[in-house]
Each structure stands twice: as C-alpha cells, then as structure tokens.
Length: 254
Ligand SMILES: [Zn+2]
Ligand SMILES: [Zn+2]
Ligand SMILES: [Zn+2]
Image (cartoon, rainbow, N blue to C red):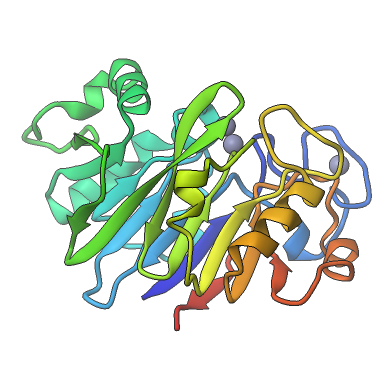
C-alpha cells in the first residue's frame, strides 16, 4: 500500500492570496501547499481518494492520477469538498459510478449541495456519477478494512480514516478517547497542524506534537498547515519521527 500526499495546505492554501511573508514568497516547492488531500494506492491497483479539495484537478495532473475508485470524506468544508465536480473525469475514464463514504451529516450536506452528481450515468457521461454511502462503522473496501474515526472539529463531529497501518486525521480540535483507542500500531499518520497560535477548531503545533507523542506512529507527517509554518524552520524543531508533510510526498507503508 502506498500513499501519495496530494496537498498539505489549510483552507486558503500557501502561498496565501495577497501575502508577501517568508513562506508565501519562498521558492522551495515544500512551501507551496495545495488544499489538504491524499490518495491511497492499494496493492490491487485501486485508488482511494481522501477528500476532493478545490485543487483536485491540479493535483491529479501533477501526480498523473488516472483513476479514482472511491472517495472517503472527512467533512464538507469547502477546502475538502469543492473539487467534487472534477471526479467527473474519473467517472468518464472508467465508465463507472464512484462510491463516496462519509458520516451522515457530511453526506447530507454533500448530496444537498451537489445533488446533480448523484444521478445515474447519462449517455455522454457529462456529469460526475457518484453513489453515497454512510460510514457509521468499519466496512470492507477492495478487500481492506476501512475504519471511520469520529473526531471533533470545533462543534462539528467529523471523520478521520484508518486503513491498515495508515491513518489520516485532519481538521481536529480534539480526538475522542474511543478514536484514540483505534490508533495503535500505525506505520504512517498524517496529522492536522494548523499553525503555531491556538485556534478554536484546529489543533496547533504544540497540540499536534502532544497527540503525535501519544499515538506513537512510526512516522507522523503534519498536514493542513498555514503559511505561519515555514518548511525549514519547522523541520529543524520537530522531534524524531515527526516530519513536515509536503505536496507530492510519496510514502510506502511497511
Ligand atoms: Zn480544512
Ligand atoms: Zn504568507
Ligand atoms: Zn474544516
């Protein structure tokens, strides 16, 4: 199983529009962050996408992604959802409907805002053709057990995801104990780390490091970062086993 990190940016991306700070003007590609999303590539070749942010088209072209077989949604905020229309290309390519998985409130939000994407395929495949599935409990997908992990994101209850020894936890203000109990024995963890200053709907650097130390994955990569977090300044201060994520990072799972 392989992970392609498509984006590690926060809602505005980095560079942020109209900002001239050190990170936003950096020429290091690791300081260019599209909106957060990752792709899981299974041994059988199936591609499971986590979220469809507004940069999906650009990410798919950059990483030469030719298929998407399922989408796991964390929640329905614009920076995780609004690229949904670009799933159309993968429906057309594969001549298939793509199943999406989310919790009930996220699913309601998506199907009411993008109802046109949940119709049966039409002759010319001119719309995305998705099917909606509620993930209220672990389920099987392409022979793998997929575990939805309830998380708090401010007042909203959203999902993180675990498949095998990989977990993806973004947009967290707190991880409930029941979900912490499901995070043992990870090889790779992608973990929210918005910025240095505290925030009411995200964990900041200090809180991310505290969670990472408790979860004890072999390798933890920080994601969903704002321009406040410059790549090299961050990398220099992180403890062993915790790394700054970046767009295009590829990870082989042990
Ligand atoms: Zn977000
Ligand atoms: Zn900036
Ligand atoms: Zn959010």
